[in-house]
Amino acid sequence: MVDSSNVLEAWGLAKRYNRRTVALAGIDLAIRRGSITALVGPNGAGKSTLIKAWVGFERPSAGRVAVAGVDPWTDRVAALAHIGYVPQTPALYRELRVVDHVDLAADLRGDPFEVSIVMRRLDELDIPLDARAGELSGGQSAQVALALALGTRAEVLLLDEPLASLDPLARREFLHVVMDAVRSGGSTALLSSHVITDIEQACDHIVVLGRGRKLLDAPIAEAVAAHAIADGDMTGTPGIIGSFIEADGTRISLVGPTSTAPEPAQASAGTRPATLEEVVLGYLASVRGPRQ
Amino acid sequence: MSARSVRLIVRQYRFELTAIVATLLVAAAVGLLVLARLPGLVEQASACGSAYECQGLRDDAARMRQLGGLASAIASAIGAFGGIVLGVAVVGREVERGTAALAWPLARSRRRWLLTRAVVIAAVLAVAALIPSLVADRLVAVLHPGSDAGTSFVDFETRGLLPVGRDLAALGVGVLAGALFGRVLQGLLLALVLAAAGNLGIAAVVGAWRVADAVAIPMNGPDQDEMYQRNLIVDTRFRDAAGKLVSIEDAYSHLSPGEAPPGMPGSKYETVAVGIPGDHYQDIDRREAAMWVAVGVIVLGGSLLVVERRRPY
Image (cartoon, each protein chain N blue to C red):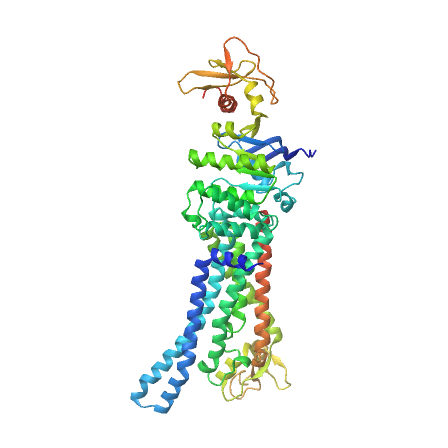
């Protein structure tokens, strides 16, 4: 059922590439308007596939998706009107200058493409307009791709691990632009990332995927509050999500609600509050097996 | 489509376009050179006579004729190959380099995205291919004295509108192959295979088409070579005393013992060529060029379907 407060929805979404490779296995998800949602999971968890299903690149094997209530596979033009997309390692036209990309995007998109927004972003980031795309760094290319996506004035920004190749400063600038677009422009953003500090800084909601399944879907503050950390490997114990090893070699376990709509964890002897990173690691460990 | 769109599209394919257009223009320039110099050389050689000292002039004229023929042939081949190379780049290179993943969501309509590119590139290719083709038209009178380009089929596959139509069909095949593979090299190989197979298939269709339009052309004129050059001969038949055209097998089956075989002196059959008269050259040129363009459009339609459904990576 389409809910107008959600801009991205998936119902029972499954994607199978062949009999062995299952990228997504029955995802139900709704991304609320005005949120910045982090999409987290190990490589192969299905993050990119999920985003690509919304962009209309991947056809669901089962279930369906909607962008602002529109199925991107059956009505791609209408669905893409709501989407600004930044692909993983965005590739620009290396024969063209940065400013040519702006012109190209304006031609491709037609109305309503806001050239002034793109130019302002590029200017703020000191990206030379006359530089050929082939001369830009990975970070600058990602920024150009993001600026073009922002120029579409789309309701939702789908950002498929755009931070992966960026240095910390470039990541910070990128996230600032995304946060600004959401807060002042009324957009919604879905950011696929592995970097927990970036997520803590920019996002208000988190979705964790593992082996094509949704493991966690909650506001970040609630997710952190609903979980706790216990010392030792408690795999198999009721209420334990997963156990994993810390940097110092000690093994700890994530204690939390068994439901994906978390309730505050019961404080008990031997537990301490979990950090967001520990929550994510605990869920990832839950699909990796008992001893990681 | 704005001038800015055209400029940006041309800039994206400028390496291929520059190479192909430059080669076609060089071929046209060579043709113009032949056009300018050959008549004078022929005249000088003719005035000089058959003396040994005049051999150099005759050799120069022969080389100039070869150059003219070669320029037309190269322009024809480069136009078709260039069409394939450009066509493969339209989708294949975009997918291979990852730019399709950026452009398709921006464009929203992949159909519009592809058509805009294809139309701009097709227009540039058509204009570039038309120039050597028109020069080749002018060369007919110089390379084949006595022939008129407008009423003769001499060298008809390398001049007029036909090469342009063929180049556009090659472009369409390239687009389809690039869209199917999403890779340049594989797309190029597939396009070459498709073009070769398609050429064979279309040659069969065109052959049947020409046969249907062919009429009997007497072979008893003074200049048989001129007759073969001027008209598009598709078959040879035999006319019996009643005026009926028969094949050689039929003619032999009705042969009485001791009777001269068809085609031999004393035969009761008159040998006739079956072909399309040179007067119809322009109609045939337009018709076959239009057919190739139609093939290109159909293949491009197939590419649209592929692009609509494929992934941009």
